[in-house]
Image (cartoon, rainbow over all chains, first blue to last red; front, side):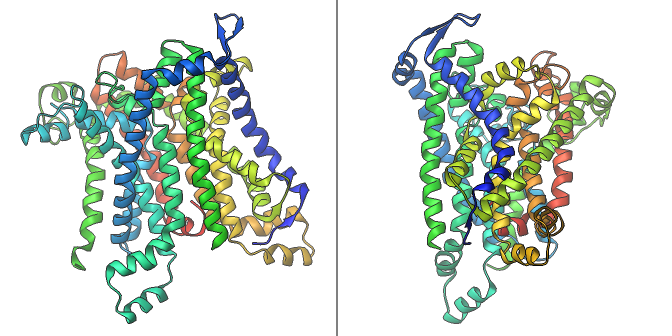
Length: 288
Length: 266
């Protein structure tokens, strides 16, 4: 759409700007304040420069949780995106099946995150949980509170359960926007199912899939509540992702300086990845 | 091939329903049954867990608190986002692209980063432990999202609509409320759905900003799990009840979801 230049449009943006700035800038400044100083309470601050940043960048604890975070995010993206597309492709396109699928599939998205964690905790308990009990009955030695592999398996399965539907809904919406004429043309040409998918459906879904990947990246990168309730970051620190580690440092140990420095580095990484995505997305949009 | 097509969604839905069923199953059991035996459905069916929640005010006020701040947040977010999204979809102005990305960065900000500063900030302005505090803090991620979705919807409305209205002598605000808003009701519905969803499910900020008076249900549950023994049945009943508001909201927007997604950006 060709937009007209109108500087008065700023007046429309002011309420949003004020509300978000109120919530974002002032607290962020507090974080910056802590990141460069040492405090002993009572508003006494001592300038520390970049000491906390150096400390965090060199700390093995940060490297470990960052590594875990990237591994987790990549695994869930790798599972959820293809799975979401596959389910969207097989979903009914008309009739009573559509609302039934949509309503049932959206359910996990609207459950509070700590309830998701609690629910999976109950579901996966080795003795009284359905998942844990069944796996043990089948001969697997499964205990997510004791074994690192099982803890990861359960956390990933929980996230797949929780968020795949978002990818499904987005892909489904993308698929619905394809006009029937495309399919008819493909049928006349005798195109194979695979050709229809790669030549028609996938290009049409590109936009929504970018959004899906962006949303899933952002949200999985800041995951906190679900694994915190499910495993508490354990066993040991095996599932202590960035946010869990950060909260532990800030509110648990009250190491405000290092925690603030870590917050800024953390935020910066998310920002960087999202900026790359966003630029790519905008470029795509301008092309089409 | 054709016949097996329903198989994939069916298996997926069964996978989705299993943990929910297990939660419901637990909520109807007595604590002794949960601890002593492994049963696929309740042997001694009981409603005691639910009775406790509906009669104990520390429990049911949690639900009221949550609903109160979620509704407040949804209203604030959509009301503020409507004019802003209109500006982004119709006009070019100084710094518009940067502002839009800056808004989005707040959707990306990990709440864990903001938990402690939020606590200090809202305490210093005397809003700690109020519904307003939670509603305002959730604006951090809901307003950017609302602007993003609404902008997508508004961009799909042709600009001729605005121009025709002005030619017909409509003032801007009359056009905005009488013509423009009714044409994007689906978009507003979807936006409200997402705002409701993300405010309802968020716990970290809601828990940090409240103590007693505005404590959300989700936080009440966490406390029960850790301090007063492990009352799994009660926990399961409370959890099951948190699914209901979401389910109601989905039911109302079910037709908008597919349509809305296709029109808008999200």
